[in-house]
Each structure stands twice: as structure tokens, then as C-alpha cells.
Length: 129
Image (cartoon, rainbow, N blue to C red; front, side):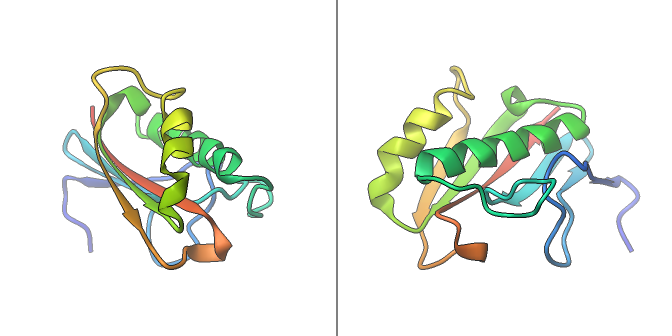
């Protein structure tokens, strides 16, 4: 049972949840976006290509969820980036700069041993609308 001030956010323009979670939850004016990996929403197949291509797809997916919540990535106040190889850090930064302008959201970047479906990158976000 959810709290009365929470709302489930869903869009068909982002990958469906592959487990017992929502694409996002809105609580008051804050939206918590679940981590996105580079799945193509229509096929649920990992996008082909390098870390840059995967990161672009992740931001496309996050954008779709943000829009479904009534916002955009410009409303992001915090991101967490998970990489299977921190040597991809600069590449992810280059792609991120295509989706954000200053003031950039706060951010943490963490290296992990593995991600779902063999993805190289996963990103979650917190928006304030």
C-alpha cells in the first residue's frame, strides 16, 4: 500500500520495469527515477555499441520517464551513475554534457562489478518539479 502523496510514474517510451519496481515514484514535488540501463523500450534489447552509445540511450530513457512525470532532465537535482569500468568516466561526462547545462545536478559515480543484462552503465535520478 502506497502513501497517499505518492504516485507511480509509467511511460511506454522507456523500458518496462524488469523487476518489482516502478520506473519512477512521485512524492510531493520530488520524483525518484529508478536506474535506467540502455534498453531500447520497444524491444527491451540492450542498445549496441560502446559506452557512449549506451549512455545516450540511458539519457533518452531517463528523459522519457521525466516527461511522463511532468518534467524534464532540467529538473534533475541528483544523479547516480554506475559504471562497470571507471575508465569510461570521461566518455560518460562528454555524453552527459549533451543533456545538461549549468547548474549541473549533483552527482555520484560508482564502479560496480556488473549491471543487469550486461550493461556498461546505469543511471538513476532525482527530480524536483
